[in-house]
Image (cartoon, rainbow, N blue to C red; front, side, top):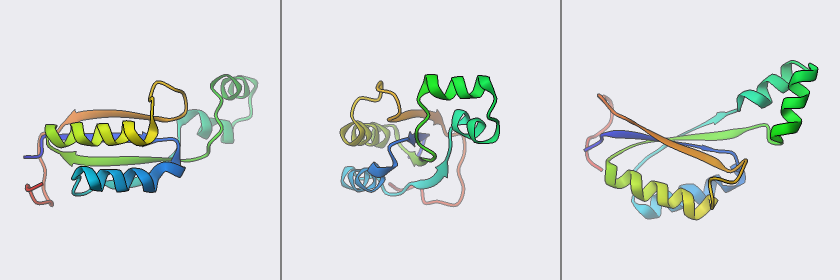
Length: 115
């Protein structure tokens, strides 16, 4: 039963293929991957104000692109997917690695309810 959406924003995009393989090995049956960019980087590209330049220097905005991965899954599968992210990415408390969060799924159409 699908009851949540696990979202992973992967800053280390060079790890994407390895992460997707790890998901597959963990039993994740599908995911959606989209290109994304953080606010600080996007603002830095559009406005070279003193504040933005300072912001970029402070936060170390060094990458232009992230990958955001959406997985519609059960609670059990979410835990397996989170473990896969930690195995591939390492310590998420380090800057510029990845973030993960999940949200409850209130309804779904268009995909099979079997994992």
